[in-house]
Length: 368
Ligand code: SF4
Ligand code: SF4
Image (cartoon, rainbow, N blue to C red; front, side):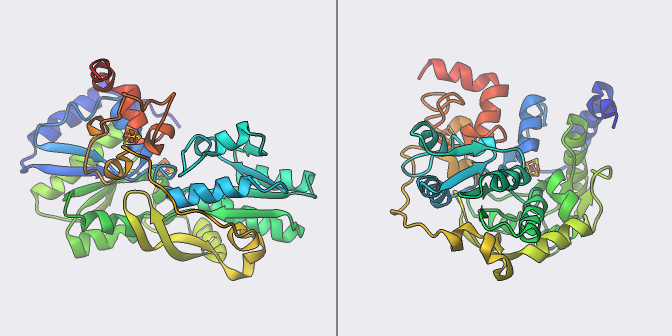
């Protein structure tokens, strides 16, 4: 697809003028997707907003919101001699309470990066004497792939493949943010990729019950600006609706085939979100029918109490209570090369995005 129109400076300029011409009071808009955070930082969109419009980054990176306890479980699983742990690259460096997967790998555990859960399945076929576990973190976007891998493993009669599922779902988590008295969000820029799967309907309660509007948009600068403009128009006109600006990717009903796949394999369970805590019904548990592929049931591990990282304010960053720059460790001790918290590890993490694409952090670092 030709995306040049979505990067066109003339169109962007027109939208910036339209945004400035809206008539609203102070507005806090949260983007809940890591890729939006990166696009906003990379294109300097925060700085060109009128003063009354604050863009806040939310819990949009699946790696960042993974609780220490889940990372500790992945680490404990990797310590078993009969196991190969596989995961996406971003998970490797994320520190848990006492270790990380990359540290375990350096100490000789068999931890491997894969690009898809299906790669983990192929590995399980090649290594029939060892259990191959896929550590799954992500939102609705990657869940269909995990479901497909589990169904394929069942079809093939594989007995040495399992998934440790720390997947989360987005819409209900936004309710927790709306109810958070520390943040007071007026509107959401809703995630494009997640919505490709689930559509716009699951967010409608936010507009109906809480009068918080949302716009689903894409990831190019013109997409984001259009999303902000549509939100401001709603607020100006006193409307609260869930609108789609990303028509090239999202239908109101989402992708029914992918949703059915997910529904078949997973059921809602409570999930522990870093910085937010346990939110009922926002996790994806593997249904009993597929328990043979559920690493949590197949290879339960004993864990010491999880411990938070001293000085790390990722939890507040993820709730939009502080901006990454406001963490005392930002660029002073915590950098993408030497991350202390997950928000600096993941390529979609807010701290990493701010560090890479804004000067503020780096000039700030020199006085620390
Ligand atoms: S998976 Fe998609 S929706 Fe989720 S953070 Fe990444 S880009 Fe955004
Ligand atoms: S700068 Fe580092 S320690 Fe601070 S919130 Fe970000 S990732 Fe966590």
